[in-house]
Amino acid sequence: MANRIFSGVQPTGQLHLGNYLGAIRNFVALQGDYECLYCMVDMHAITMWQDPKELTQATRTVAASFLAAGLDPKRNIIFNQSRVPAHAELAWIFNCVARLGWLNRMTQFKEKAGKQRENASVGLYAYPVLMAADILVYKATHVPVGEDQKQHLELTRDIAQKFNHDFGVEFFPITEPIIQGEATRVMSLRDGTKKMSKSDPSDYSRINLTDGPDQIADKIRKARTDPHPLPETIEELEKRPEADNLVGIYAALDDITRHQVLHHFGGKLFSDFKAQLIDLAVARLGPIGTEMQRLVKDPDHIDGVLANGAERAAAMAAPILREAKRIVGFLGA
Ligand code: TYM
Image (cartoon, rainbow, N blue to C red; front, side):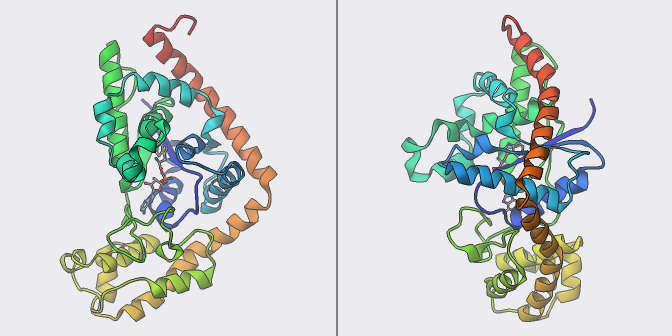
């Protein structure tokens, strides 16, 4: 089977450095070697309440970030999920394949629903099933994501396996995650034990892709650190979450390893290291932010890219969905 990539980003809140280093940057790196579909997952977004106008706008902003980061809309299929109904149709079939016990184990649901479990939407609970449908409706073989999506991808594999087993077919591929780079789990700048996240109330916890040089500098300067100089070894680094996070960010932005960063900065003061990190972050992220600002001023261009992407995605999904329906025994498929 040919290699095919699918990945998605939710159009909610501000895209941040974690989304960039954990996902979007890898999308760009993979675009030459695979057939790629990159999706704004607006149907996943509404599993939590979204203001309709903001959702539309955020969908364009995520698309702008993909383009600004260097994804070519001709070589890749870039689109928003709700435009291709095949995702929802396959998700229903998968709702009948996945087991309650599997979903009960999903840690992201537990985190997001929190104490309000009884009041969480059914969509939030079924979220990983829709994710499996996103991927398998294209028979994608590889999925680049950050570390936090690993469990969902294991569920995708379980669903594919059970579908194949229950119907006695070898139809859906067993998808491989691609979790690569030095920053697969970027942590909050305020707390090295918490993931950098769109939903953190403190804007100082994250670097947004649209932050200008002054904001980037200010946030890195204020990032929490411990009082010691930078460690010399990886073993030392691993015991110091804030240091580990900043070193990981540096390594990822500069395309080197943590080890190489320590070789250079081990024993130096955080103030020196942070000054270099600021320069590096501004050099890497500045142009993306500027290009995003330019692109969002031209919504017609973005909407055109997404319409074209949706058309190509729908054409690719149609025969796979039809075959899945035939396998299930739906008359007329
Ligand atoms: P989302 O929108 O939360 O995040 C988009 C991508 O960014 C990665 N990411 C991070 N990586 C490193 N450090 C962080 N702090 C960090 N925060 C986020 C995520 O791992 C993700 O790759 N469920 C998905 C969207 C989705 C999807 C899919 C992904 C829907 N269908 C099918 C892959 C395939 C999500 O909520 O991502």
